[in-house]
Image (tube, rainbow over all chains, first blue to last red; front, side):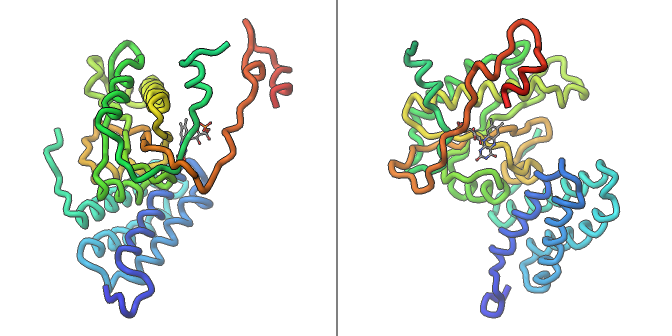
Length: 109
Length: 186
Ligand SMILES: Cc1cc2nc3c(=O)[nH]c(=O)nc-3n(C[C@H](O)[C@H](O)[C@H](O)COP(=O)(O)O)c2cc1C
């Protein structure tokens, strides 16, 4: 990402995405239309704004966001499907954070 | 009446402003040893403790934990490993008894920490799917609460009001539930 021209660094983008996604997960008990969905809409807008300027690891996360968040809008009344998408987004976030920190997956029984 | 145990229970408060000093290994081990003595349902001993002190991991965890407001240098996750249930079946996955085991252990360790002069604060607002990736946790192993640990800042900047408490008389029923007492308590 070209920090000279942008208002946010890539790290700040990841920080904001982390917050939007984590809050959407923690707000799952609230009606989707109020809490989580608005967080996800903000994340989707941010992803669309910066996707062309980020590194491959962050691009993968933003691609998942741009593909799955619009689908989440269509299933807000089907709780299981909605929750599954929010969990999927947060797993992608975890993958992105781990990859950027150079953490490799260890043996998981 | 008072004694050191009652005094410790009464004076423990959540502390969110800590110094940079890392929790000593000696203190950490005393706290973990205390956690091991907390009771668990059917004595299944499902609690597992995951201690994180690496500053890079702490930073990653903070990013996906909107409920962590403190600058604690140690995160002590109280986890449940479902493999420790000899009679484990899928339907038990959400059995609330797990959560009671977690709460018992967390409070036991918070009191142990307080008795040693450490600051602590329990947090449950964190992102489990992301933490699974960051901390390499298998599906059967779930962190339910994190106890943020450190040494208290001597001159905290953001002093919070002491947690509101009701008198015990307002919380207690004797022998049978009495509906009108609900109004009295509020
Ligand atoms: C189950 C549980 C979850 C909590 N989650 C959080 C949290 O996410 N963030 C936080 O700062 N404090 C959290 N707390 C701390 C409470 O806010 C705190 O214990 C309460 O306000 C009373 O303060 P005191 O313990 O200092 O009296 C949690 C406490 C419990 C028991």
